[in-house]
Length: 202
Image (cartoon, rainbow, N blue to C red; front, top):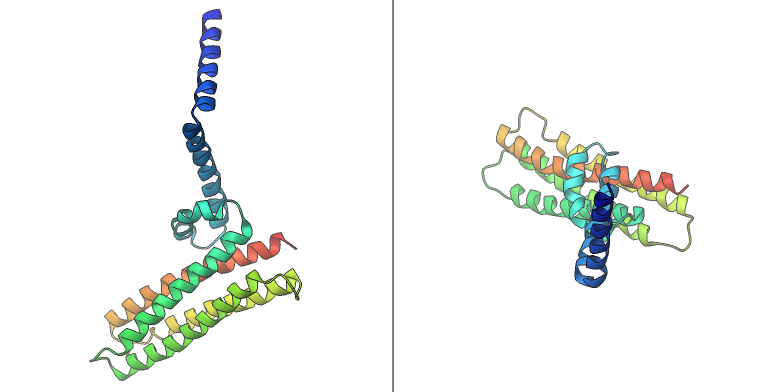
């Protein structure tokens, strides 16, 4: 038994000396442990959303930036939703100019572009408000952000509803719904984060 105890003592001393005499190895270990902590934080927040898998895949790549900051992950979610919405808006605009679309399809696309444009404005206002520190109280600011992100999600849902009619071609309908669903899911995640952040800081 004494030999086993001696073995573990020697091992512990060796490991300790390895980390204290090798700064680069020590730094790598710290980064690894920090990364593990950061992704656990993200997973905890994502598990509280309607789309936890999409959430974790999306935000785990920002773990080093987010770390364990509720404000940072909430703000990042708004930027991700905004960028996705902008991309969708461009795609919808391009598709609406495609030749051979039925009049009802063109109309639905144009309506959708308008709804998505409103969503972009609401998400942009939310991002600006997240950075505000003067004037309104935290609770008042968060209430405004919750209202705007919720409105953005409603706009995206309205856009999807426009492609539910039987008069619209099945392929057009499927492509548009796939495009907008991703945007709506990311906005839904952002709204969940906003609600979480607001509730945790009351």
